[in-house]
Length: 82
Image 1 (cartoon, one colour):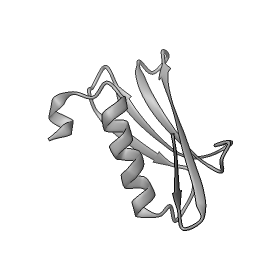
Image 2 (cartoon, helix red, strand yellow):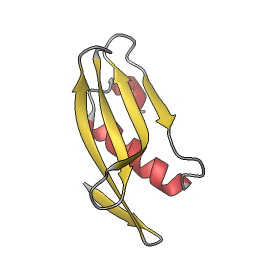
Image 3 (cartoon, one colour):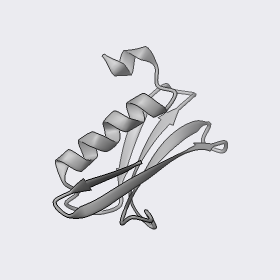
Image 4 (cartoon, helix red, strand yellow):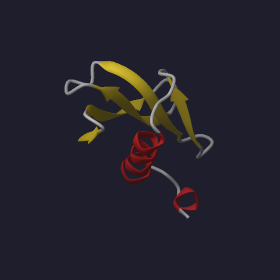
């Protein structure tokens, strides 16, 4: 999935992480998403979602979009979607 904000293209991919026992949404900048700027991880153990930022000054609108996509696409418990 791709989004554009103020001329910058952002993409994400969703994957499973067996070693951490959960799923993640990796946010990248550029049309190829090669530069990872954030990760949203959902733990199947704790049922919690965490955010790790790899780029300072990430626009709030972009982070909100990524979190919304993560809530829709990851195996998130219903309590997190309230």
